[in-house]
Image 1 (cartoon, rainbow, N blue to C red):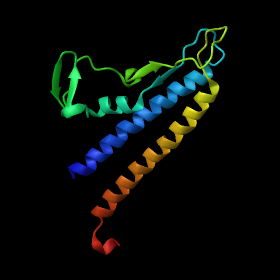
Image 2 (cartoon, helix red, strand yellow; image 1 turned 135 degrees about the vertical axis):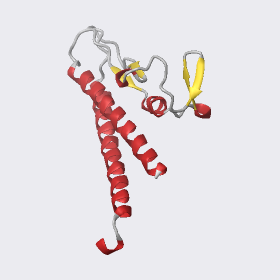
Image 3 (cartoon, rainbow, N blue to C red; image 1 turned 90 degrees about the horizontal axis):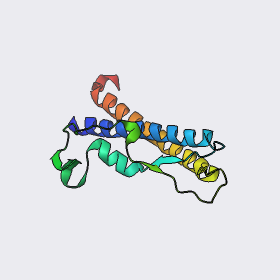
Length: 139
């Protein structure tokens, strides 16, 4: 049972982070014409590792101390602060805006596909659990 809940917990964390990344990308696209706007994105892999507590050797670094996986980290950051980085401008712009619409569109589509895949993984896990709980007479 623990393997099933661990899988669901991981997928739920991934889904939350995918939704947050989609929000960031949409914000970048919405501000494509805003002078001085600096595009933001997240390093999804490191954000997921941090959110699930799967750092190297099974510990999470919080300040100067390492605690066991599953402990609540000191100075917990919100999901919107996990792994946020500024996007490097692909070309100079007179208004100092760093949004590259081609990159943002590609990131939006890529993240959308991965969001949908995460939903399908969750759906499959839930169906597997429901099938396991059915009695043999229910078919």
